[in-house]
Length: 490
Ligand SMILES: Nc1ncnc2c1ncn2[C@@H]1O[C@H](COP(=O)(O)OP(=O)(O)OP(=O)(O)O)[C@@H](O)[C@H]1O
Ligand SMILES: [Mg+2]
Image (tube, rainbow, N blue to C red; front, top):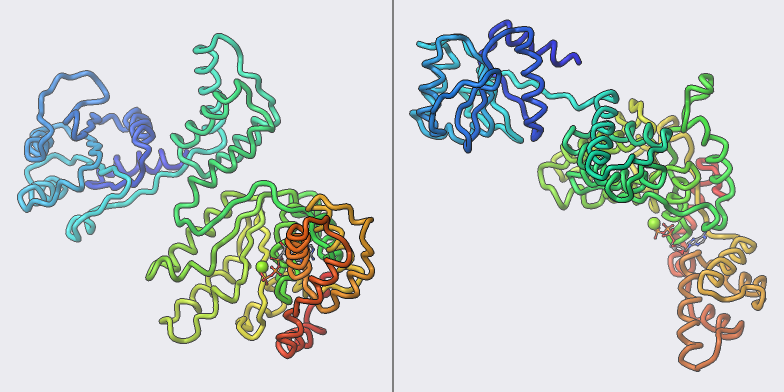
């Protein structure tokens, strides 16, 4: 591990103050045990409960955990040491302690110790921050994670007296999917997967991915679905389906075909209620990967002032969930900040575009939008998305398919209906409106104590004024705009 080398170098150079932000205290201790194997300095640990103890060899010293006594004891050590102080920063509020601490760090009447402040979040007063070196603790790599898995399996075997039933392929996939997690988190997840059923196999993957997602979604902006819709659930998106099928293999393993650029993303533009959201889910299903939805609309409302940071974190988490589809539904809602938000939405767009252009992880972006006039031109420029698909109002045959799908979904036999007649009556209807008409006809039928029949359904359709009629100009303008600029989804 490189970081060990780095830490050793820092200790050898007698760096006075290091800060490590982590909850993985055990890992910090392990790291420094390795460091002292080379740098040969005494290693100390302080916690509020145990006070100061020496870790590298048993030495009985009695220092009460209070701050002044601890700092005095550190100062009294003539031999240059490494002091790991856990959750200590919060105790430096008193002027006296702060002064004492600073003197040690500045080596006034003190040996050239290395003080390491460790905590989930270490906040220092400015004068200390200026003296501190913050070291990121990297996360465990594949080898370490594999070790964790073996360790947990062995522990279970000792406890239960029988072997864990391990599917090696699945175990490798599990280890790969633990990347990005800290050692304690990885250990906790693996332990749970083993204790569920004494086995590690493919069936563990959905739970693993969900657990990982829950850990990574600190911003709360992401939503996760392991198994989503399939193209069989969406009528009228033939071209999108074929497009995805053709690229699936390259997306999942770009190394097999170095001449083909891996697909990056598509924008689905179109009339309301015609299946954009459904098609987005089907794209994840088509690639056979989980769907991660980014809640773009609430990015602004929820975190005043933290918008960009949260977007950065959310996108970074998404990469750790790869391969996956990142779905940004109604992208215009998240970008239409105009000029009155202090430039935040411009910066958000800029960050998103850069990320889309530069990301290496297998994250396929699907964005949807209803209104083009609210979309920034940069987003529509060629090269941003691989393709912009237009999801139009369904044609007559597609409407017939939508009727069949939704009747079947409600346990009705579509062959007992005259589908072409229904499709004709539903001229100008979106898929959502067709579904609504079926729902409302079912209520009518239930009210009359009869099964749903053709006449009731036709009557319900005739009562509906579709959006394409109510907002004819808007819908027409969108369709005109799309012509020549987009590829038809069907
Ligand atoms: N092409 C379609 N095939 C099957 N069902 C459809 C289709 N279009 C719409 N529906 C039905 O209507 C519902 C709403 O559609 P969906 O939310 O996907 O539309 P949308 O284009 O995302 O609309 P909006 O612009 O309002 O977000 C779907 O859940 C589905 O039940
Ligand atoms: Mg939608």
